[in-house]
Length: 91
Image (cartoon, rainbow, N blue to C red; front, side, top):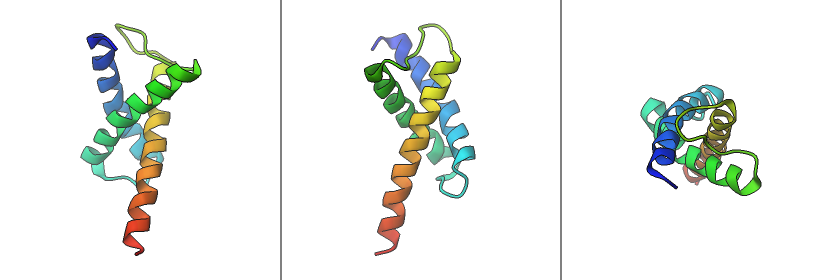
């Protein structure tokens, strides 16, 4: 992954974290937590999308596929982290 791609996914992660927090109302971790999870989720979404041939980022800008891939990765990661968080509090 080039430095440009890394920076694009980092910025996408910030946007994706905020959007994922809006989508997953009630199971978020606050704005800062959602942004951190969004950054990690965008990398997860980008990695999975690249492996499946359905996503990826274009160097030098955003596109709809990149944003959707990052948001989907962030939503999935928020969901998974939320499951672990709930199961831990139910013990």
